[in-house]
Amino acid sequence: MKRVRLDRALPAVLVAGSVLATTALAADPKSIPVQQVTDMLHAVMASDRTVYTQKVVNRLQNDEKVIKADEHFMDEKALPLPAQMFRFGAEMAATKNKDFVYSLLSLWPVNKQNGPRTDLEKQGLTFVAENKSKNFYGEETLGGKKYFTAIYADVAVSQACVTCHNEHFDSPRDDFKLNDVMGGVVIRIPIN
Image (cartoon, rainbow, N blue to C red; front, top):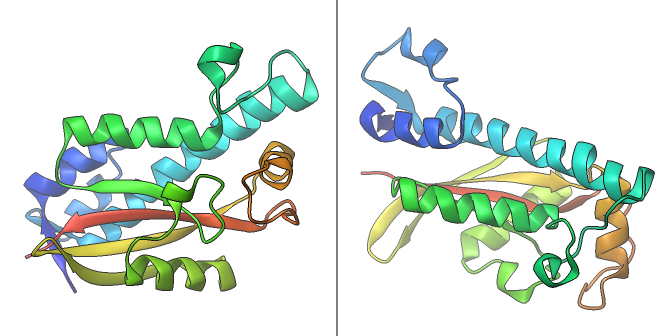
C-alpha cells in the first residue's frame, strides 16, 4: 500500500481543518497510507460542503427566502454558490500547502473549465457516477510527477443544488434529482 510521509500528510490534514490522523498514527508514527489521507481530507471537505449547502444556502434561499445564492454573488449581493465556496477553499489551501490539490469536477459541468482534463479524471468521474457509494483511486503522472488521485461522488444534497443545475442555461443536464451524483471531488497527492 502506498504511504505518504507524515511531514507531508499532517499539514494537508490540518489545512482541511481536521486532525483525524491521530488514530492512524497509533500503528506507524512515521507514515499514513495515502488513501487514508485522501479519505480523511474528503471527509472534511464533504462535511463542510454539505453544511454550507444545507444550513446556509438551502435554508436562506429556499426555506426562509432571505437571500439568494448566485454565481455573480458580488454584483448581486448574494451568497456564493456551494461550488464557488468549494473552489475558494481549494484556492486558499493551495496557497498554504503545496503537497495536495483538490477540485470539484463533473461529466456535466455548468462551467466548462470544471470538466475532466485527464483520462484518469474521466474514468474516475464515470465510475463514481455509476457507483455513488464507492470511491475511485488511481495513479497518474502529470508534468513528470507521479500522483495518487482519489475521486469521490459529489451528490445533490439539497433542492438548491438540483434547481440551480437543472435551471442554469449552461448546464448540459436538466434532469437531476435530490441525491443524484452531479460530479466528483478530485484529490491529488504527489507520491514517490
